[in-house]
Figure 1: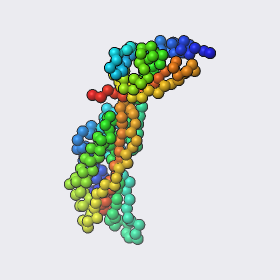
Figure 2: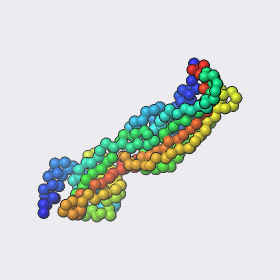
Figure 3: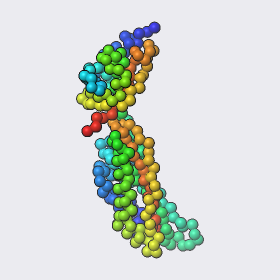
Figure 4: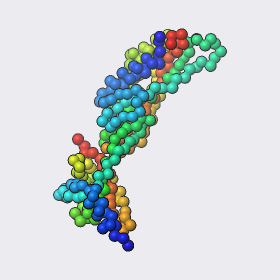
Length: 149
Length: 114
């Protein structure tokens, strides 16, 4: 069984956990206590394929998954500290050898790719101190092979 | 006209109030009675909810005036009560039927920088 999607998401969680000064890392947990901040949450992404063509159903297809990574922090200087986390996140995901191998190996014809699509910065608010976060969007392009699932 | 200070605020603060120390600027600390308004609060970022508290305290404006703490000194003052120390970050006046000068101010607080 080979599930490239799951392998990417599992590795993504490991990569996010290497960001310096992140205190907690979760996958799909949407309730975090302030004592766990700064926290990073990997949200499983939507998956789309280009498989609208007329061909056998088990043929390999190119899939694009767009997971979100949310980083949350509270600090009087939350803006500049979130930018540090953003920089570390982007460079670690795009440069990670294992992630790049996962998409490259799944698509020997060179269709695999990792892209940073951008991020949405939420409004800061007050809790015990100033609190803010951002949601970064990545795209992973890989071959989905139904016969391997 | 009902005297809300005597009929409302006096008994409420006598029952719910706790002793606090306020230090505004370089002035000496003053002792006040505050009502701890710290409440559970959440904030959502990108669909992830963070649980924390919104620290706050109610103080009677006549008491602040009597202790010599002027309105321009509220924000940035250091307030200690119930075992914790905070900085006043906002101070919305709550008003009263007898006029805002006889009402309360709600100190919105933030933690003291480590």
